[in-house]
Length: 332
Image 1: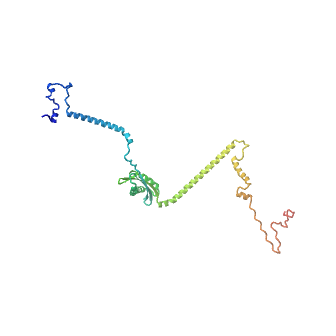
Image 2: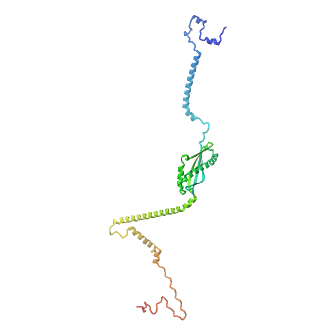
Image 3: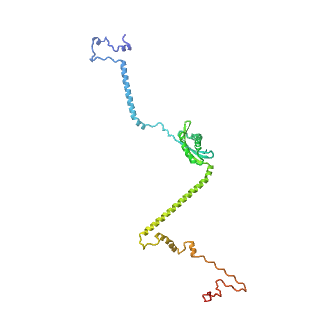
């Protein structure tokens, strides 16, 4: 046969041909170097796999370093795929609850409790928000009624402020605000604002008492103000007297007058005003004293009838007396 199979070539790759001239003569190749025996195929494969693993490790490490360094720049240049979701909007509504009558101490009279509930939610749909509020409102009202009943049981019916303070103190612990409600994955918070008022029968009973108390308070305030005004006026008068005395203290005895300057000016002012008005009186009484009312005219005597002597008039002098001016007789 002139040829051999590939398997035979591979099995005898490491052997020399004894029939070649060089083999028979024992000569070396022309280069003068003895060729190294060929490397086995298994070792060559392991060496290439090791180098490939080292190259892959180095490449991954370098790629991670480059990506980390380029990440800030890429974040600035990258366009978002979609718009960011808008922030959640909290929906808020206020609902006024009907007044709640709560029995006071003795179970005879009641307190009137009013409440305004503030509802809010972050994940409720606007079109269903009102429906959820209507659903939770009775639950919150009943909860507030239960707390108010417990607080009002020991408080007299004429002290609503004490009940308001007790309610504020009771909204702690398990009943601390805000109250949370949930249904179908939708959460709500509720914060009640509470006010307490008197019942109408109690108001009518207390009204006369408060009428008198208000009148006494106003009278006391009026008396206090009158006392303050009187004290202020007394201090002003005292200060004026001190000033007038100090002004006259440094004058010679001959220049001192009976009245201080302020009093003299006060007394001279009405007289000067009277002179300017033409000496007119300052008051109605003074006018009546200066100008008395005229006397009414005297009545005329009746005419004498025919045949009767004429009676003398009241203004005429008696003939017996005579006229003193004419030298007539007069009484001694």
